[in-house]
Image (tube, rainbow, N blue to C red; front, side):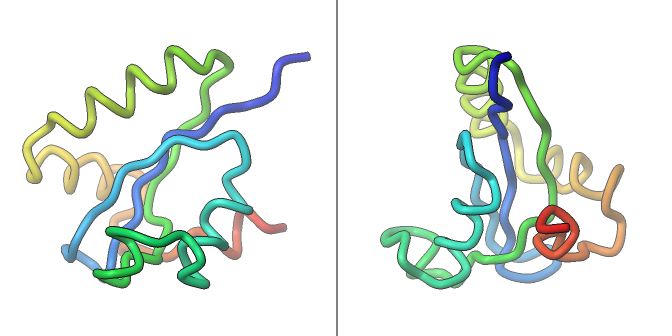
Length: 97
C-alpha cells in the first residue's frame, strides 16, 4: 500500500502570508511549522495555521501540484482555501483526531 503524500497551505492569519509545501507526514510537518522547528520562511513570518490540504498517492504528482500552486496568483490560492475552508479555520486539530 502506498502512503499518502500531502500538498498543504499554511497561513499566518486569514488572508495573511501563505506558504505551500509537500510532505509524507502532514501532522509531523505542520507541528514542526507550529513549533517553529522548521526554520526559514514559515518561522520568520509565523506561518503556522493549516488552512488547506489535499492528498496524493504519487510523490511526483504531489510535487507537480505543489509547483503548480506556487505559480498561481494569490487570489487563486485564496479562492482555493475559501472553497473548502471559508472561515480559515486551523485544520491541525482535525487532522490529529
